[in-house]
Image (cartoon, rainbow, N blue to C red; front, side):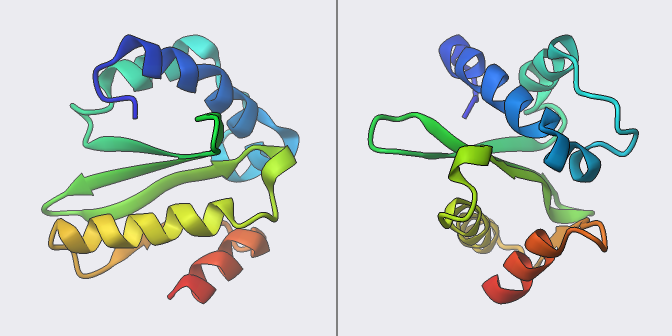
Length: 134
């Protein structure tokens, strides 16, 4: 997701904004602490493939999005988890772990030996998730 389907991008936009702009997440997902504007996120969704980005979503049985992970792949810079967020009502249910483990599978399948992730030192939940995921 979202690749090229307009409906995927349309479904992802409000979820992305809800996750990334939640006060408890914004301090970790925005280096400026300025909320992400819909217009900016729309540009990201339109241009993600050119920038080396891929979006992965954790879905429930009704195909509702529970969490989003953004990865970037570059043969020189490596494989990076660029962003990961879970809807507040689904935090603590293993959604983040599923996404991180999926990133590990994709990175290995693409020939990468490791995964880079920038994590703020006070984001203990993400640090613990990455460390316990190996």
